[in-house]
Amino acid sequence: MPFLIGLLVCLMGYGLGSLNSAIIVSHLLHLPDIRQQGSGNAGMTNMLRVHGRKAALLTACGDLIKAIVAVGLAQLIFRLAQIPLALDPGYLAGLFILIGHIFPVFFAFRGGKGVMPALGIILWVNPLAFLILLLLAIPVFLLSRTMSVVSLLCTALLPAVTWLLAYWRSQKPLYSVMITCVYAALVIWSHRGNIRRLLHGEETKIIPDVKKN
Image 1: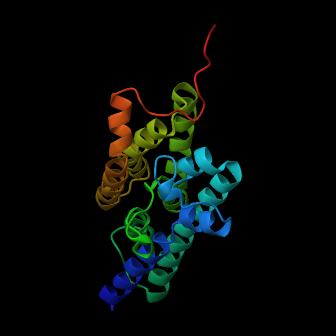
Image 2 (image 1 turned 90 degrees about the vertical axis):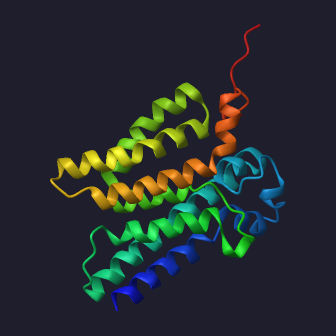
């Protein structure tokens, strides 16, 4: 029974994760496939650059909501089944949400980079960690004006923030830190193109530099 419950949660997370909001919003608004536009990434930032704020906002909301729904359902299923788990079951669902978002079965395994779903997962499972990362993200964005820098920094810091909060709460951090390390690895890997552009000074900023005359 625990194996079947775990399998159900993993499949549910992957299925919901595969519902890529950027691609769906593009279809619903009768816009060109976002994977053929701009950077080719099916995510909020590319939607903002190519299709504007409305499409980007709908994409962000869709990715956040699917993550929150999957995490909440995973927690409910394990609670109803009364199956103990070494970590919050939301983390388990979250792993497969990210895999589904990056490699969506419904869209030829070409999805987004996992940032917005990761935010939704952490917002629901560990709200204080989300708040800390948000407070760090704001000044970084204002200084860099580059979403990939914010995404990479917050993702890289997620395991450390998770560990510090678990230590502060006198909890055992091993499993939650391990799975957030996997989260970080997935998101950083999906940003490998952004990392190359950052190293070469070619990454596009959301707010361009103001040129002085």
